Amino acid sequence: MRLQLERCRRNLCVQGCSRTDRPMALLIPYLCTARLERSARDEYPLECCGILVGRRNGDDHIVQSVVQAVNIAEGDRRSAYQLDWTRLWSTLRNSKAEGTEVIGFYHSHPDGASTPSRRDVTAAWPDRSYVLLTLIERGGVHLSSWRLRWSPRRLEREDVLYAGSCETLPGVASWDVSTSCKPAPHSLLIA
Image 1 (cartoon, rainbow, N blue to C red):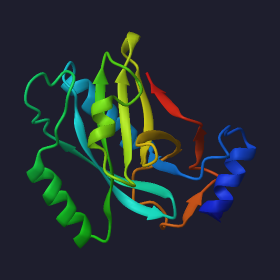
Image 2: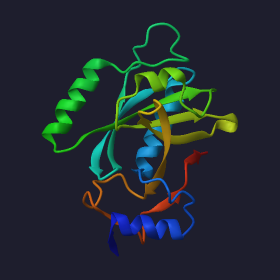
Image 3: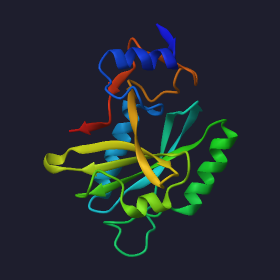
């Protein structure tokens, strides 16, 4: 049963999503979260980084693909990242040609905090989702998403909703609530 995204969100909140007061969400397919997890594990103990490509629907960001980038940070890449600019510019160009856009970025905090660092806040672009992957004990990966708010300048947590497939999602404004939407109030633990 296909429902408009706004109605889908209301249904999810009725089913247990605890953050109905927050108007923004990141919608991401499970397969894309698996790609993020693999990136964090492959780059460990260094920070991984990459780009989220998709579409916007109001305040919501819908991820359609994940583009891994090389961490070119100078110094200790275990506690810092810098996206490869050539990968970023080619992704910006390609996404525009495909009718999508760069809706956010991701990086990991190997053995670190599951909240954004001061450096993360300083480098953040406005109105982009920032997925933070934290590797934790027993090999799990904690996933959370954040967006820049201006006054005061801070990254604010956004809800994350998960879909069952990484195929092109069924339109920008629709979501299959009967089989795809899985509420996760703030984060996902990938074991």
